[in-house]
Image 1: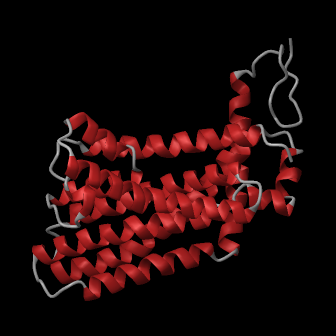
Image 2 (image 1 turned 180 degrees about the horizontal axis):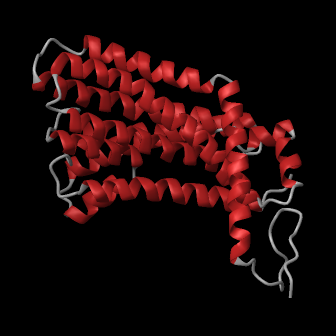
Length: 292
């Protein structure tokens, strides 16, 4: 029996699954949505704003973070950059993506796109990829400029740790961008989405960290529980990843207590990717069931 696509790009119950030859057109449709979203983000000056934000704060921190010279100075600056990025990058990512679904619905853009032969999940994935390219590029350029200043000032002794910081900053930004898409898929109004995004930032960056630190200080917990605490919070996973590469407990807080644990970099990176993929998958399901 031949395929009979529904208006939303899916396939009616009882019809044959699409053949392998249809996979490439699907990828092209996702790519088309991603390019459109990328161009819209560039035109709205989001890329410039993000590069300026990360570059400005990174340069200020590198300039005023102390007078130590040599490798120890760069170690201190990278640890300080990590403490800065764990607050700044998630907030920027949530602000960049909180209107991805509900904002487009308000503008009428989603209704037009959903009338085309493309599934809603493909629209969500394409929109995410377009914005992810902008966010990742802004993170690399903004903080990368700071890295150039650090190399000129302190040399390349801790260059590997800085690259770990830069990669971790990109990863945690993509995680919170996916969380922003999830928030946008849940909310029905942009103001509600903004409020949920701020609550998500407060929970992951501030509240969860403090609660976990209090539990760790009050009780002697087995290592698997401590590992679960770290992996359950992408912001903490990011800090532990970078501090572990530095081999330091500077930076304070809950993450510092786990910088010397047996958590591997691969496990922390996998946890960040799982957070991003899981959040985006749930957002896709919610958008597929959303009534316009």
